[in-house]
Length: 303
Image: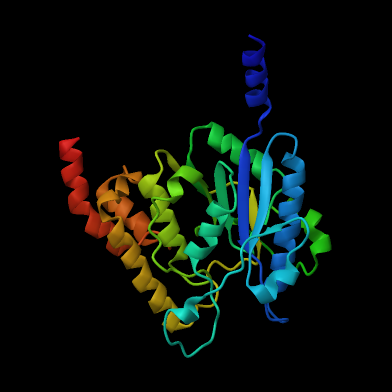
């Protein structure tokens, strides 16, 4: 009887666990990512502190060997990245863009957390971020994305973080914050898509829609933010854009039988309405949607 009580107390006291990874690197001195990365790191530390009594949060970094000295003490450095897009072909511009799968492999293999979180390095967190993520999980969602708020680019110091928190900001349609149960990860098909280029968000989100039982997109939460009001950044060099596009379709081919647009946002709306909504959204390829329509009809008639 005493053993049962002790076991119950242990399970009751065991905190839910999150592991959150970002790719820390040394941006060019004139890049807006210098400030953005500083803000992201500090905001993650504060959010972890606010959730510390109810959630176990492990802050992880992935980095190259040369960038390892940049990792703050509040983060745990995972195994150094040893390859980039430059290992995948010949490119005119020498950008060492990390491969998404390499980052998420480290998130999965070097943590035991129940829920895994990946965000871009320019995405700041509100102090209650992890507490709200727990609420979304408690609501029954095993994978979800949280869209950021866009705040003015007038900020120039991490010391202004408290002021950034107060900004209501503007909505943004793209996906840059991903949360998912660790049991889903081994099912993912990511090919060799790299970060920092379009198609990363499309590839990862489609895997979440495929394999999560109850996926969700939060479009208007005040939980993450980005410094700058732009919706689209300057387009990446075309050679990397084309590379990621090719890898995206490779990833989709591997999970083709699992794709189901009924699990996408607006997936149950009238065909013309949903196709219009997807066509106007940067993260829902209309070509993919059209390819899935015939099978969608067959599945609806057989269900």
